[in-house]
Length: 279
View 1 (cartoon, rainbow, N blue to C red):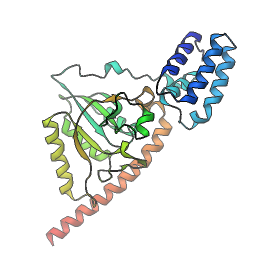
View 2 (view 1 turned 180 degrees about the vertical axis):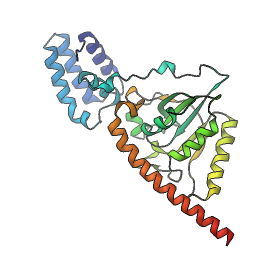
View 3 (view 1 turned 120 degrees about the horizontal axis):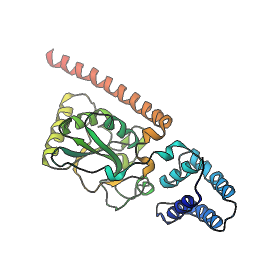
View 4 (view 1 turned 180 degrees about the horizontal axis):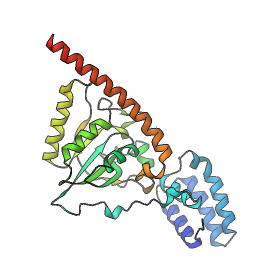
């Protein structure tokens, strides 16, 4: 893969100025940029930078924008998947609406919604907290009050909000207020963020039906809260299921196994409850 000198310098400059870049990352990037500014062995400097970043890159533990840069200089196809943030908007107020759900890691919340008919766009992001323009580092450090969430724009002629709510219950554990599955912490808490009174009524009625179904032994703790500012996550996190299919599948399989077990328990409990009522 041919790497453009000028584009690389611009990318380094932007990452150095990026407040989300960690200090040790910034130090490596600055050293590389200084060397490239002096025309010191372009390929050699990038190879050195790649080697310095590689240990954390292999563990997917670089900050998101630096990870995108690493993918680009190593020729990883994931670097070519760029989310068009400009297209994620309500373009038709007559026939489009939006929904916001938090239910654990947003990596696993995108594909189930995005592959439905009538879905216009699904954006991963942060909401429900008190910090403007939060970064992944801040949210994962639990410094912002935000939860990882997805914002869904959908065509109301094809799919309805209540259908999205019903799918949401199937994707999450509504009895776990301290996270979801292997993801622990307040940033993974389950929340339905409602945009208006109509959405609130639909969500409340759906939640009440779930409570009355007797599927769960423990209380339903998913909260229903007013939507506020939705802050988009970094490009690295958008449509993660397309960029890093193997890692996504590993996480998704573990999540699905737990959900399948939980749903089986729910079916058994529901049958037992019916039998008890009729005996």
